[in-house]
Length: 225
Image 1: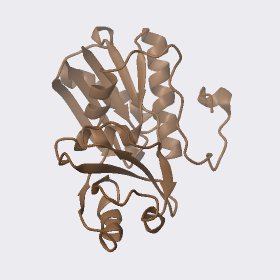
Image 2: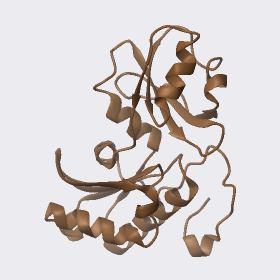
Image 3: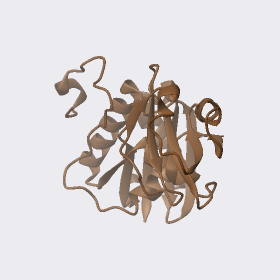
């Protein structure tokens, strides 16, 4: 399966082109450089580096959040437009799922993966996963300090993602068996997760833990809230 995947919902814009399990092209840059008008050029450059045309792709994939409002909406709108124009199926993957997928090789069998995403507020976005990447909770928002009371007491924890070191430091002050791996969402993990899922009947929609602080005109953005 040939896939094109994009994440622009987090602090680093990431684009990946996969040919089966082979990473044919990969681009990563600050999210601000990959939003809006820059996305078509960045995607075209990735496809060119992979030696592929859009027509040869089998699947498109995009992160749907949680994450930064502007980048999330820009990336999702662009990929939905690309899917509509090409007739290619588009699969949505959450940023937290992608982080956990990328951490599977680092987690010990008895560890819980705690994926962390910056919310640009006092709180962070979290989700708990088993060492194999399967979800143990729904996504939620909390401060690192409040997180202490929200986690089960027993399992060892591998915190991954944005601010993982800060989260692990807070947790390690009150419990044993906590470690951290700072990482960002990789579009290659988004593509690999999307390849395991059936194409949805409806286009993917953004996932918000908190309601957006601003409301974008639906007609201009082309996304349902």
